[in-house]
Length: 137
Image 1 (cartoon, rainbow, N blue to C red):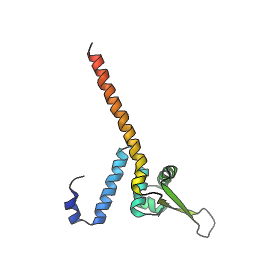
Image 2: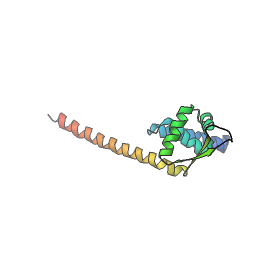
Image 3: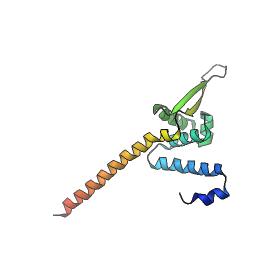
Image 4: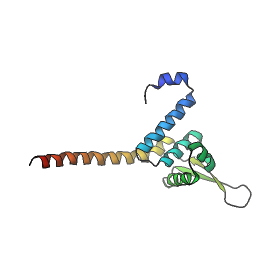
């Protein structure tokens, strides 16, 4: 990430937070988390309760992608959904908010990454062992 102390002098604290949020989204994606889910999670943390149109705008996602991300976060019990009726007919709109602090929401994703890392480490050991076997002949 580099030295951020000098960066903070020339930029606002909000810039630093937003840059760190973008970097966190990229890291989650690199760890195998769905990109839309990563964006929605961090966006809800940064901006607080948000409607679907707000998430679309803030996260630069299409409505179907927001729906998929929210569905995954709901299945993982990370998002609260508040239905809001406008006094008119039709479907209510929804406001989404994180059900837990960000650190708690990240735990399942970190656990999945640790599990994948363990599998990769075991596969590396197997490659080494099998290489020894086939090069001995």
